[in-house]
Image (cartoon, rainbow, N blue to C red):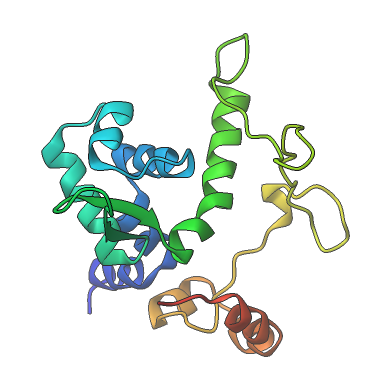
Length: 182
């Protein structure tokens, strides 16, 4: 198998590539933003996101098919539906917050972000957790070593040699406990 074909296979199996298939375009992230704001109806998504109905319909169907949202009949209107976040969709919220924080830090207007999230109980802005090394220091790219994981395809085992056998036992228990499949 050629190197390019092996690379494509590795990308097909990559969890980041799979996640980007679900949420990796502008409209999808903006639709999720609105869902996190409490929007559930098609017409509200269309209004707040400013997306064409055909694009919105395609993205909502993709979210339903991927298990990120479910389509629920509106009790007051026969033939109309709401799009409600599933556990999988709600579980993406920390990733959304990380992207929002990056945007707020690097791209917001000088006056600050358009929207902030507050803790309902305390009424104060939420605090974004900082990623840390195992020794408790703020995590930097330079602190990370990329190694093949237990589920790595042969291409990635070779590309990121080492780590599979050494770290599989230690990481397998944590990885399995965090995995959430529908």
